[in-house]
Image (cartoon, rainbow, N blue to C red):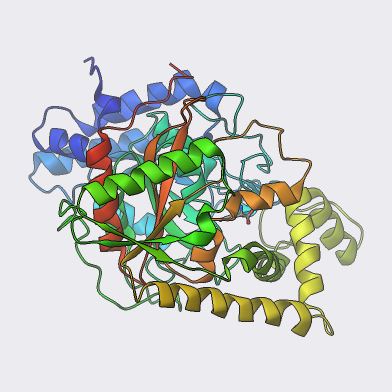
Length: 490
Ligand code: GLN
């Protein structure tokens, strides 16, 4: 059976089509797998495709539906997972040689929840090694490319997730965001990416990078799609001590409520010439659209935002150096042959880690060393408190904070690899949201006037108020019409 246009539909539309039996999960899963086969040689969004398993799961979903036992709106829908999520029986490398061959004995909580909802996992998506990066070029297995222009980066670290969704290979994906890794690639690929409040989604079974910042979230083509995925994975998990017990609202309820009456904070510091002219123009147009829809723009200040990148690059490497200590060749993945135990640790880590994790292990170990701890790590933690207070103060006067996601559109592969500092600056606008543990998202705000590449608007919400953030994003999405599909892969 041919299914013209089925892959162009949103997850929400596909869900309805499945419900009405216009299409089966098996048909759409096969269509997605063919799409991956036809495009991924050029795109490289996937590190691993699991076709047999996916087709079996799709058939099971069809059988459930035939019995009238569909599990949820996600039942039978093809999705994929960043390779940071542990998947039982399916190799998980986190983009690193050191985890090559590691087949997890259990599923991450979010993977369990998606399975319980009936979603069909097609495979594992490319990413920067251990989620460290903004361009996917730190993947040990070669970078993913941007489906809008194959010479450009899809962003990172969840670049494979954003590219796969934008390229119509899958209907949604999960990523993680420690300093911008969901929002930045979503922005650069023209899709929706949501980083929930810290504690909203379980981190159990998610390979740890910087544990006080890491958060799981959806990447999807539309806001309702993202809201559906978020609803499926959010909620308390006793296996993650930082998981919140607050109840999860129905994110689809009230989603169409519009922007009227919302107070949108516009931080001066995010509009001081730090972005490309074309980016700033689209972001300002989005703000004007909100005003036209009945929202009020409020000037706010985030005076400590300028220290965000510096503080992040102490806190994140410090936590990473500790989290990455477990990869020594004994229990997981790679083990280098050696004569002594010490040599095995050294050789394994030397061969297994790429340049960026090594750089961060050194930075982090230094920042945590006796004599330097107070000067670096502790000070960075204090800055973190100040960043959080800036937002607290802003939220006394507004409901959401808005600005750019990324200072530039997708840059060329190779453009920033030689200069880590330039790469780190890709996250100037996204990092404070992680430092402050707040929810943030990227929603398409149009294309760059010259290059025609996508630009995202960032919205940051109050703690655990994902609902307001999603409602505002949906209002803009409706105003702008359906986001265009990328043209570089046909
Ligand atoms: N680009 C940032 C970094 O390299 C953020 C990564 C992330 O959010 N995982 O650390």
